[in-house]
Image (spheres, helix red, strand yellow):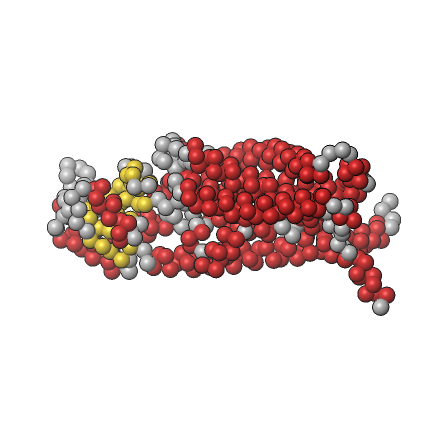
Length: 426
C-alpha cells in the first residue's frame, strides 16, 4: 500500500535540504538563538548575585532593649550591609532609602524586646512584630529577592535566637508612596504575569505581520501577478503602503486571537492564587500606564511593526517563491525572540554593560522596554526609544520604497543555487 514511500521521503528531504535558506533558517538558527539566550540569562544571574552581595537594608530601631540590639547584630552578621538610621517620621525614613541605595527598611517597634521575651499573655504567645517596607523597582524575576532574604533570616533567627517568634508585617513603597499591608512579593508576582503577556503579544504580532507581508510579495512574484499590479495607474509607494496596512490589520487580529486564548491559559494558573491577592488593582497601586503612557506604548509598537513589515517586504523581494520567503524571514526572528525572552524575566539594568548596549541596539526590544518604563512613569526612556526605532523605521521604509520604485522588485533574487551549480561545473 505504501510501496515507494521511502524513496519519496528521501526525495523530499533532498529537495528541502538543498535550499540553504531552509537549512540555515530552520536548523541552524535555533542552535544559535537558545545558546545566546542561555548565555545572556547566565550573565544576568551572575549580575544578580553581585547585586545581592551589595544589597543594603536600613534599620529604624525604636527599641533600646537587648533583644532589639541582638536582632540587629544578627542581621549584620549575615553579611548584609545594615544602615541604622534616625528619623522623625516614617516618610522621612522611606526617603532616606534612596540615599543609602537600600531596597528594604526594617522598623523595630519600641515594645520589641518586651514582646519577644514575654512567654504568655493570657493563653496566647505574644511574640514580637517588625515592619518591613520593600521598594518596588519595576518588576523582574529578581524583584522580590530582598524580601525573600529577610524572610529566610527571620525564620533562621526564630529557630536559633528568639524565645518567641518574630512576625513580619510587610508593606510596599511604589514611586515614593507607601502602600500599607501590601506584600512586595505579591506586587512583583502580579507584575511578572503582566510582563510575560506583553512580550508574547509583541512577538506574535511581529512574526504574524512579517510572515503575512513576506508571503504577500512572494506569492505575487510566484504567480506572476506582481507585474500586473505594478503596471496599474497607482503610485508604487501607494502599493507599498497598502501591503503594509493590510499586513498590520491581519496580524493585529491574529495576535488578538492568540492573546485571548493565552489569557484563558494563564487564567488556569491565576485561579490558584489566593483571592485576597487577586483583589489587588495595579492601577490603584500606581502600577498601570497613564493616558500618555498608553500613547507612547502604542507609538513604540506601531513604529516597530512598520519597520518589521518593511524589512520583511525587502527580504521577500529576494525570494523566488513563498517557501524561500518564509525561510528568509527566519533570519530576523533572533532579533525578535532573543530580547523578548530576556526582557520577559530580567530587568535590563541587571545585564552586563555590553549586553545592555546590544539589547538596546535591537529595535524590536524597545516596545518591551517602553511597556516597563511607562508603568513606572519613566516617559523619557519611552520617548528616546521611540525616536531610535523611528529613525530605524524611516531608513528601512526608504530602502523598501526605493526597491518598489524600480523594476528590481521583479528581478532581484538570491542566486545561491546558481552559484552552487557553477561551482559544480568547475
